[in-house]
Length: 133
Image (cartoon, rainbow, N blue to C red; front, side):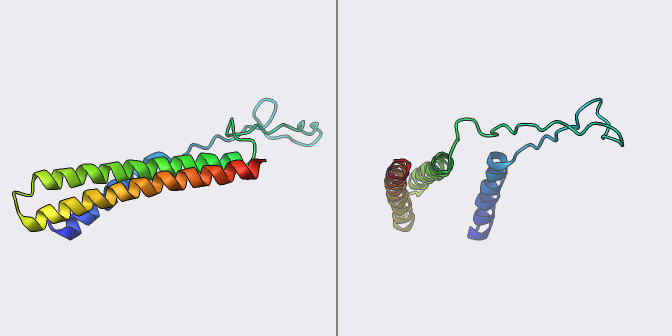
C-alpha cells in the first residue's frame, strides 16, 4: 500500500469514529393538549421550564472541563494507537535499518505526544479549578 492509500485509510477511520463520537439525537417537543396546534379561543400554552440537557454541567467551567476530558481522551486514544502501530512497524521491519529507524521514531514521538497530552490536561484542569474559585 502506498502512502496516499494509507493516509486516506487512516483519515477515513478517524472520520468514521469522529461521526460516531459526535453525533446527536434531537427530540422535538409537541404542543400542549391533544397534540394539535392551538387555535383561536384556546388558552395560551403554559410556560414550560427548560431542563438542563447536560446533567452535572451547571456552569461554563463545568462545560469546559467536560470538553477537555473528551478531547484529551480522544487524543490520548489516538496516541496509544500510534504507539501500537509503531510496535507493529518495528516487528515487521525485517531488519531494514530504514524501517527500524522509522518505527523507533514513531514510538518515540507518540510517547512524547502522550506526555504532552498528560501535561496539557493537568495544566488545563488547574486553570479551570483556579477560575472556579
